[in-house]
Image 1 (cartoon, rainbow, N blue to C red):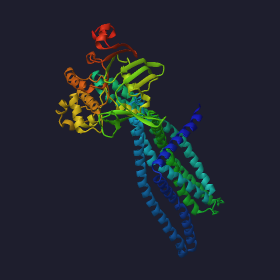
Image 2: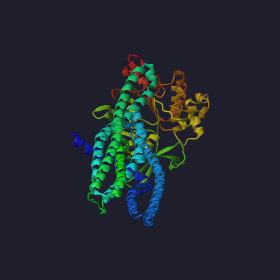
Image 3: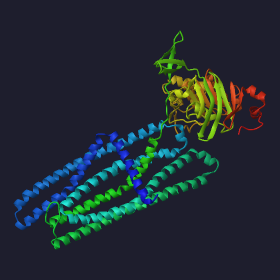
Image 4: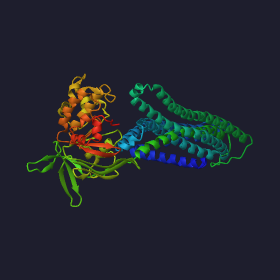
Length: 638
């Protein structure tokens, strides 16, 4: 496609994005936005009025100089002066009003937009975050939102005001003199040509700059998360070199963008000055030659037209230049809007489920009665559309995968023909090399991803029929990588169940053995944690994650290398609490330490996405297969 073909297409795309921004603006502030626009329009029109008054006043002054009759001139000049002053006072009030309202609209728009972005982001599937750098996502909330702030708070009001003034002044110019107006139009064509050439190049690099900023922030965030690894492997120089490349790309894009942007305004300013000279020259020429005036007003050509025309020329070209100067803000805002809307347009997790998880109270006759308070007893609330009835089935924790196939990338299977039966209260363990598919199975049970083929049933219910939130609420999970949030130790434990009381949180910490180290912290349970619990050891952080799962009190637990970061002595302490926590629950354990899975009811040995062996520890040892060789050290898991 030729460059000429791309230009209109890009312009159309930019206008479409800006139109969408404006629709959001009117949706968020349907009353204040039009009021701000009206105030801007009124102020702009008033600023164009002095030219008309000046012509009339100069006309009266000319008559006064000829007749010497001040009384007649005064009766015309003074009322017009007071009227003009009144307009200016109203314009000041209008400016004050619109600037105050514009601040509310601009900051309110950004506030509502960020909330909408974050709310939408929270509904996105895990795959969205797996495929993007987190720093690049963070850039949406900072640089891209700030680009919209520049657009709404500065560029749009400036453009609206400038266009209004330009149109008003242009009409007044035609009213005074068509020939003089044509001189100005020729100069404006030069302004537009320069704007297109210089501003277009600047805009292209501003778009690239916006993307480079997101890339640089993503790189820095990644390096910050991996700082320990960088230092352990003495990778500082390589990291610096890699950052230099990313930063140099940002520098080049920013340099080119600002180089052309800084050229634009001085060039436009000088064109305005040259045009001013040309208007003065032709005005004088018309006066000397007594040229016949062509105008909408029918006024004769005179000094009373040339002087206002000079002021209008500066005013007209100045506003055209203002519009030209906002091109970069518009383009940057369009680039930011495109990235923001790409987030907002991402498809959220689909949830076609209708089976809900509810608290129930069991009556003496065994009947399940739904209730609001937390009873520790759960049931699946199953509405039947056929007859309009509702049935309650007690949550048992029976999880079954039948002939499950799954691929992260189409055509590259990760799991093949996986069948697992986990009866209520059973402990099912998965062992195998990294990449064998152990964690993927638990991701499918949680519906972080949906299977390609087969069935996953929970208490006999297809998990696709269970609402996602209710499904996940019934499953506690402890990951190998622990995430703690800014807040107190108690708040981080309560994260497992927000309505849990302090006593329930204390009990969970005692159950897992975490209370021992918590009480030795400076403020105990009230100790503030920051930076993902950077002031705690890895083992202590893991204990808090286990306590979080304990307070959730779920019927099904997933332990993904839950004790991998805990030393042997701590593991013994945790194991006691874990045994109590796992009692009566269905538990899926992923482990590299075979000592942690020996007491499992069934052990699944996985290899390249398939289950190659299954059975109890004693059964697998007796088979003298892969598990036996792993256990005896004949070869490593990896």
